[in-house]
Length: 400
Image (spheres, rainbow, N blue to C red):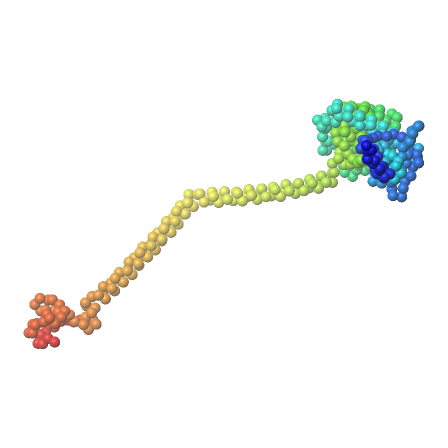
């Protein structure tokens, strides 16, 4: 039985091979010499890496190439990190580079990382050993080259911020042969003399080779053993050295180290004046409150004197007496008014009041009973009629 034949195009084949290459190899470090170097107008870099018996095509694209700290050129020995890939249009395998560094720099960087791990394990970077910087140092020591730009920057900053604080310079080589020994000796000398309250260990920027004296293990141990607080201001902000990790404080630049170690006297003077003004205001306020409290106490004392209290009681008695009199007058007034009303009502109901209006009251002469109707009358009977101002007798002669 004939098996089915699978046919691939060249593009499909290269795509499959490229995928196998990219999946089969992790990111690698490769060391070699640059040759056939080309920088395309697009910004991409194309070249070969070779050794004594072989070479490989390489590509470094613009995004990664723009971060390079070195200038690639033919004949330069470099250490690169990247991945294996395939340029499919030509079917050529190539190395896609993500990072590149000078071979010498790469060796120093690996030494730096290894020493950093060792010293960290020994506890030289521990925060427990970090000393605080003095807020107001009596003397500032500077360990650096006496002819470099770093010492000029530091002195300018210190002169501006605190010109009254003396500065002691410990001159040393900051790179090259003998520099690490001079740095160690200067740290130990300053520690013995104890003439300074704080030390600045500094130099200007440079390559990793230029800064290497501050990556030496002997310098790290000297910093760690020093009883004086040390601030490290080596290189630029992007530069890090072993001295930065061991020191009590790291500054990004020499000028920043000078600012961190020195008080700003102008700012302190302004702050002190502000505090003094605030203190004056607080004291004035306290005196004002105390005066008001004293006046209240005096007033209370005046109010509690016997004469004043008797006067208060007498005045209260007069007030109550007047209120009582007013109440009695109101009471009798109301009673008098009520009596007048009742008397009026009684007078209106009195027979005398009726008589005053022209009426009369007739009674039987014998019995004195009031004659209310004609049925009680008899002919010839005598009746007595009372009017307003008197009475008279009558004899009944007819009844109608």
